[in-house]
Length: 255
Image (cartoon, rainbow, N blue to C red; front, top):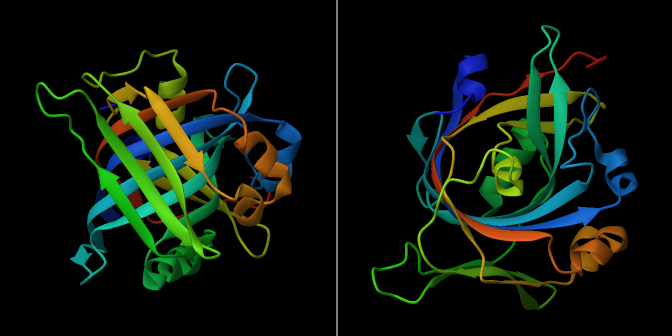
């Protein structure tokens, strides 16, 4: 297992689950669109000088909060829009993390927990999925798609893949996207909460085809709708794994 939150922060487990079949469509954006959203104490994490946002859809499975399974809330879908930041600790450790612009889940209770404990921007909408992964031997390929109903219609994030997944190379965009092991969330008082996310490196399929059918202006605003309306710079599906999300801690006012 690579360096993760577990090796640098022993705070207790808040949530355990499996994240599976992660569709990741990645888009280059003007950094000026993200700067107002960067939590205090962090800076944008650029991929070869480019600012990226990712549309991510995946299955949340076998979920436990504080070690307990919550009836009817263990298996569900999530779709989120996120970007990437860095934080340097007082000891000089460089931590790479994600900031979530929007997160969609199917149950109000899940959204409520995330808003209360982390001030994350969750909303609850009807959702459905189609996943034909892993690919059966001899099959031509597989697909993972996630849909959510908003303003009277279903919107869709999907990718089709073939062959076997593989670990991405160290200097690849896929490795950059998948290996941000921290989350950063701006709080109502302007401070920042940091929480660790633990998982091993993920194998990925490069997408043969990708689809993002969404009224992005209505859901994410007109400024982000323009880059999200272009073809993604990369598209892939990550196999996923068990994950641990740690309790958050509030960073100092100066970061």
